[in-house]
Length: 459
Image (cartoon, rainbow, N blue to C red):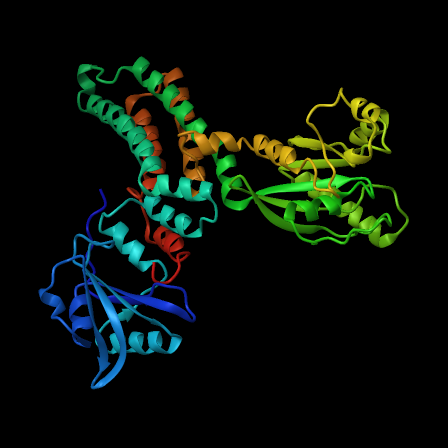
């Protein structure tokens, strides 16, 4: 458990976004938070009021009224930071907030560092490190899914799984270390076969968490989706249709798109980063050739490929040749038969042997819903939406889990080779160390600084 480290100083910061607005909120936390505000507040005596109450009054600099405000009290330990916290809601004028901040600083507060409120909450045992990081993810969430994942982690879902893993390992580590105290009597407290079963079980759980990181990365950063195909297949038209705006220039002249055009669209709670590319063909035009080369580079980095072809002018044999020449990397892909509104039933039926095929008309925006459904299926979105599975979204957590997995393999190898108890205990302790880094049971100042300085001021 993280020890409570109540700070001796009081911090202050603007917690709402800078700029003009209807209201702004200035937050103070620390032992003098209430007395500092009381010293400039004209209204009820805040120090005599109950926690979780609101009070109307004015903030004054000597006799000058700076603003009419509402003061909210949160007395420790029943507050976000477990310290006394005061939130001053004032009018959202940059001038007013600046004057209030300067006034509170003169009364003895200091400006908070980035993420210092949440850092204090962590250090005071309000929540663990994984939950603290989820606060930043919650603020940054821009879809129902990213909000859902961040909320679950902030409420301790991921942390509970990690703590359960650590508790089981701690038990076996203590049993093995107990054996060392009775080494001369040749007793065995830790059942080696039970330890092997436990490690196998832990490996399955950790593997599942590691595999979820791919989905977590998709939720957090978006799916890089490359739209590729021959010139005039309708790639730019499709991009415009998906974005519902004229992002790319559309022309009947082949080779119009010569550079990578990228934009994002939210589909079913998943952010897709659509990348329109130059048409794939042999060309003597120097600029267009550069565009084709960039298309091939994007294909190598894509998480999903949409290969568009004109169903009215392409035969199944030609499509197969294009796919063979394309040499798609080992990523999911969809074949999009464009201009279905102009195709004959015979043309549409001739591509029946191809899998992952969607017919559409990008120009008339027909078939887009079918395409969106297929896009979500390709990234397994339904599992993230409806399942109760824990999703790893943080690279730091992923790395710690990978290190844990690697060390568990070493423990198994040690069991196979008959490694002595002291060496087994050391390897298990390393596993505990890596898992402890996730929740903050094992921390360093550098680690905390690296995490909390990425937070916004006031949080």
